[in-house]
Length: 260
Figure 1: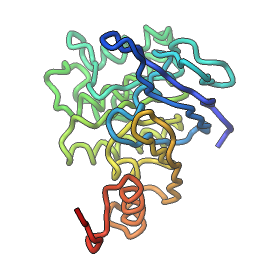
Figure 2: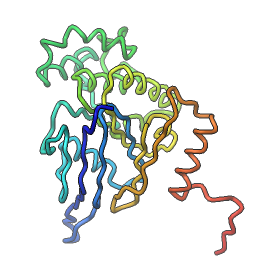
Figure 3: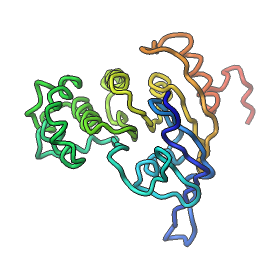
């Protein structure tokens, strides 16, 4: 680790409810430091503020209270050094896969210096044979792989992932989890990922930040010291899964007396 890259200091986020004349507290007093090169997952039920926190780190939302810092500077807007990948691939349908990567480089003013590396990015993602294909001509997994590579091509310091594999079938999802680890290990970016999937969080992350139901708070931070690649069937993996599910009240003892 090369030191703190992101500092989240006592962030709270309130949204106005226009129809009720009141406010909704999405996040409450959230503090977290993220190290350079780390892979972090934000895990929790829908509505616990995971995506809101990610949008604050991306500069798309501002906290109501507290602050988030990137490289020691308060985050006040978007920055190409903080890439964002959504659940849907968001590729431009009128551009080829190569064209989508070129567009990202031009938008970040890196095209002149990095265009010679586009072929390398396509090869890294296993998309060399599809450089001139359009998004609708590719499978869902290949489109999402292209979206990941497009985000990484501009060399962000941190990649923010908002449930990037959530819309895929389970087998494609597991394959792309391996791709994501490979890309992370080859590039050394910091990864911050929102997920609802316990196994995905264990398989990918060095630390899992478990968030409580709304208002979103950090309930627990769990370190996953297992080496990569990880074995989903190992006893260590199962122990972490059971621990997290119990923490989230999804793994009650079947011998427990349920008295109504």
